[in-house]
Image (cartoon, rainbow, N blue to C red; front, top):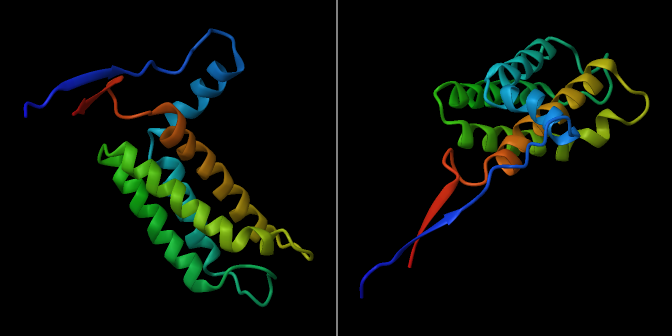
Length: 149
């Protein structure tokens, strides 16, 4: 049985000048192609490792903070090598895992500044790289995807 190749055209997101979507895209799209936001968050997790849990309530333990230091440094490396799709997906997934386990605790009273800052930065990273993974790139760099039947 012969294999047919069908090309499906996927249009890029609409970019009407001056629209809110276009302005957000102009800010977020360059950030989502850079490893710097991921490396900045990795640095924040590394710097928070010296903070004692007893003094700052609701901080994740040292293993979470050091583990996510390496995770976000690694995902930044993935993006820096040009693997933007997998790097942004991994960054988004790991950020959402961190938020699933730690967001509620960090916002509980008495709040600690470093814990809230880590959570806010992780929400920002999930938004930046999540928009790249789920919205800006439907399939790949090309705006068509070949299906074989």
